[in-house]
Image (tube, rainbow, N blue to C red):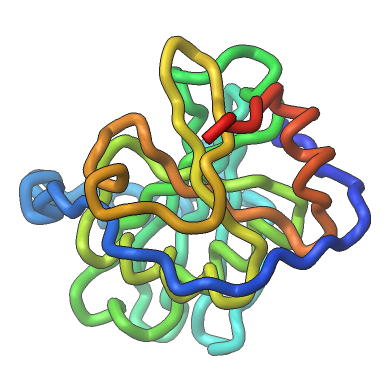
Length: 211
């Protein structure tokens, strides 16, 4: 289970992050779409995906079904009016971090059908995850859409950058040069509303960069 961090609120000055590397083609992962199959399983009594905990988004036609498996969360967004899945967000464990950081960090990856994109659905799902106390960190690569989403969320949540290598995290600050952003080891993170940065660093074992 992803553990909440009951830290007091600490506001880092807002910044507009520079461009992150964009080197994933979403269409490369869209072959063999499983959304229809997952929707059918959610609607089938007796199936493992039937009767999952759920909540409704601001659009009353959209319901999110939540599944937790091996420490990872799956948020399936159902369009109840059209009787289909709009898409899903998976909050993956980061295999690159050590056990200490794994207790707190998850890396979200979203996939939504074109007609449901740019409607704030993924943003609402991220808001939900952060509200439950999850701390989010980018993976090694991001799509253009994911990058835009993280930039938007950084306006409302505490955020920063870390260097991740050899399973160790080093805090890099709240702004990065374009060259540093291109490195696969550079990761952006978002913290829940009541998360104190110094205690977060201590919780995940993140060192402070001497630079």
